[in-house]
Length: 509
Image 1 (cartoon, one colour):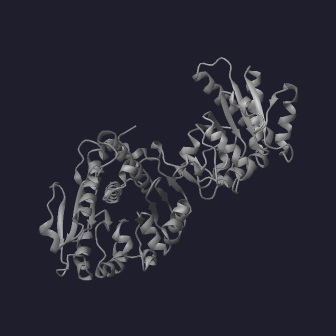
Image 2 (image 1 turned 180 degrees about the horizontal axis):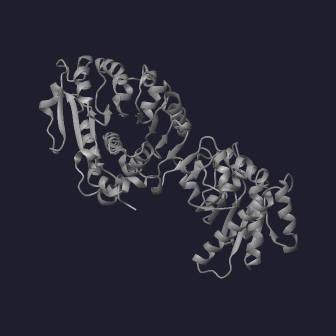
Image 3 (image 1 turned 120 degrees about the vertical axis):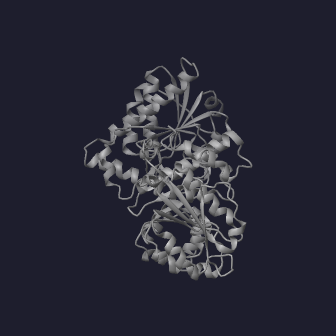
């Protein structure tokens, strides 16, 4: 599902008016009618024959949408009270809608003078600010929004909760806490920010007549991942196939301190449906490796007794890469300087697609341009700390604009970027970005990233498309975490809990 920024939504409006000759008044009429229908639905669910609605109005087109809704509600017999915040500076289309309402003689109230009368209304409708707001809310408007939030009344937001950034999902100082947001055309990217849901509530998308062809004008679209984005992952296997038909993943991972990371990635690759998995680990650690999964093929690699991969390991690793379909590189490698040397020398030599994770990322942080020397596909799976190390910046800077960061890095190093965290962001060199809706706080525990890296590698090895493998893998990984939470609870969830749920996510509807 397409998501848009405030700027992109304005562009789509402009294209509809300029190129498709749809009057702006028609778009506003459709928007307001959609709001009225959503309000009517809200009224019907509460078995109210008639309801009283208070509509709070700003001065932009958002207010015009609210006025159109007021007209339809009044025609349907509901009592509507208007609470205008401004008497001057109204947008031209809003002025037209106000004129159409003159004959309806609606009750006008003011805040704070008419607080008691406003509180008598069944529903508050927020039509104060739209997506164009770009400054902090202060003064009397801030006081009004705070009062609305504390009133105990149900609030429905028109297009976006007033005060919420359409691009980041963060409030401009303060924002309406709506139970429902009726948005127009497409959901806004900010709705899927870290804490945006507490402001938007349930989001209902209204088609206001913007031609779908106009979307082609967006140079770098952003999407919310949905099931139909990776349908091929759900195909059933044909009779008569064998393990060789489903790919061979090589997991290069582990060190004396973190052998379990490679184990998690290896099992996860198998759970993705991969036919064969080989786990290459330092030879000095081999005796510590006790697999509960005999299906994993372990390969001990010479490490000069360091219990880490070192440059002299490369020859054996090169040999091991032969005949493999995908390489998962990095989980649990540790931070030995010799391992970093190996990575910088070895990465350009690998021709297979690579899922580069964890210490594979931190190991190249001093020379990330090495990625440009690769001839094969690279998928980076950093958490915010690893991304900050790659870009030599602070985690807060990464989190401030996760979408643009992922998009910029993907373009810079010509790779697929999976920036993990709440609402994991996946960016492709084409400019496309996908935001993942699955996952939960219980997954904030060691090893979850290793499971994801292996799962992506396992899907890639089966010859699914890159896009479907990556966005589908991220989605199913989060969904497995959600299913595990339902069965086991959120607190105390561990990475290996996902093993039993990953296969079923691939066939979930």
